Length: 200
Image (cartoon, rainbow, N blue to C red; front, side):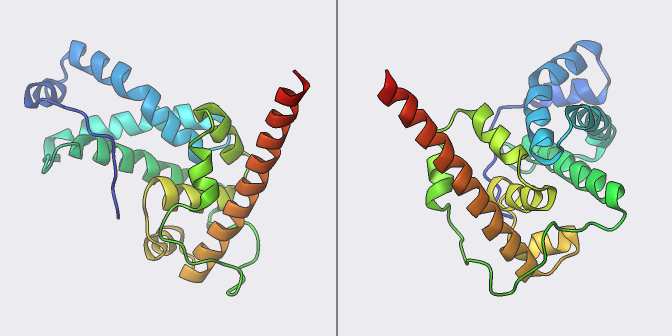
């Protein structure tokens, strides 16, 4: 997995205070990370209530797992927490369908090999975060999940296939379809934006 997590400084003293269950440290921990973890959850789960429940459950797992957590590199704490949220989101999706089904039928010839960001993903950097999040949330559940794992969590297609119990070709196909949908959404968005600017 090609982790590119945002690095934050988490002191040993802070982690020790969390392990001891000190109230001030727990409150600071929640205030500091809850918004970020909610953002991750919302990329996968369509309903905010589900995402908020997942964040609460994830924080409990994080606190319970702290005695075994061993930071091996700078930013390891954030990477570990994010992975717990992502895995929790995948579990929620699995539970809803018992056996996780990707939307759309796999087509072994309907995919593109892409290890780097495509033009539309680079263009998405020009969007404000909320607009990009809204577009992503409008994708079918399966497309959204594969795109999240590949683009944001840096999973390989092999890792996605293992996580979702699908084939690598299905993962590639769904990523291609998700990208096409996002490309069309962004084209429509920027065309509308240009029309409004021209009318001023």
